[in-house]
Image (cartoon, rainbow, N blue to C red; front, side, top):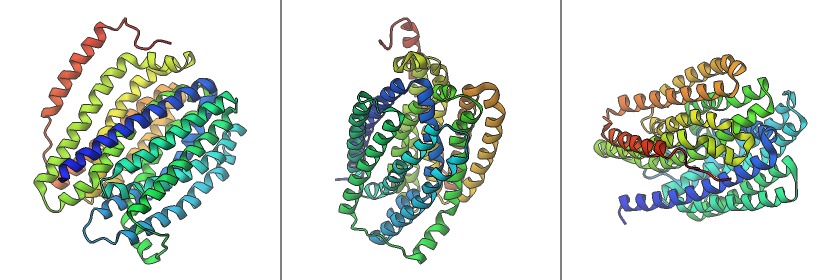
Length: 440
């Protein structure tokens, strides 16, 4: 089978599986949000936001490093996967283990602090699962990874329904998430070892080489964490759990949607790494097609959300109706992230992660200043506005770094056609705006 056909098949399976996974994720979101209510969901959101700081910091750039390394010819796969996985295991124990200790010093209710302790187990398994993605990408067998994710989500959905019917409360909801994460990791680990028979390895010389190569990525991720999650943490410190819930509900939709470009960009990364050093024209073609594909997904999404956002959030629960206006704003940040994932991954391919590190630092510092200034005054609208601004800035800067370094010229011809189609879509939706898009 040709490389193009293999990529096409993997993209299809990945897209289909991702759609199913997102549908189940949103189903869990609807159930949990309705069950917990606005305030309870605000506490649920605070726990997740707090832990995502630790979950993203523990990445250390290992996922991108492994994906790129496995795309290089002659690599000792067992050695590199074993060392990367072990390094991730150790860093996860240390970094995520700090979360339950540090949350004690925050002015949160006991439900949030206990939730952080329980959910840290889930984040531990999630971060181990993530680093193994590169094994499936290298073999162009992402369908296995997606299948594990879908089965884990299915278990989570069933467990959530059982927990709600048993009235297990917020703590019971947290334990269902742990169960789903454990199941997904178990399947991913077993299937990845079927492709590469790696074992735990602690070759300190190799670890030193990995850290020397990834520390700019690690710092970039740390800065990325600051601007990506500081909004919810700052909002939780200045405003009530109800405000966090109103912001957290559309943000959950936001996070579900951006998982699509993350997987798509991850699939392209080893291909881009391979052709960058050998075939400049093909590198440009692959990058252009990736850019056009993400535009095709992002533009209609932004347009459609302007018409259905309020009905969508009201469908979750009448208490979340105010979240519709927040979703209309956040969807612009979603579009920026769609493109940002592609160019941020390509920055690593063209070896300009150190350059991008300073851009992430500038964005992180600017975002914290803006969050601290706007969130106390404008609550969730201030948080949403800054989120859109910083995600757009990251996408633009990473695109400029890639274009200037690789000397590629990206065409905007597809954008004009996509935009024209989106305008037609908007006119159709505007003419039918009195129709009930969602029925309770």
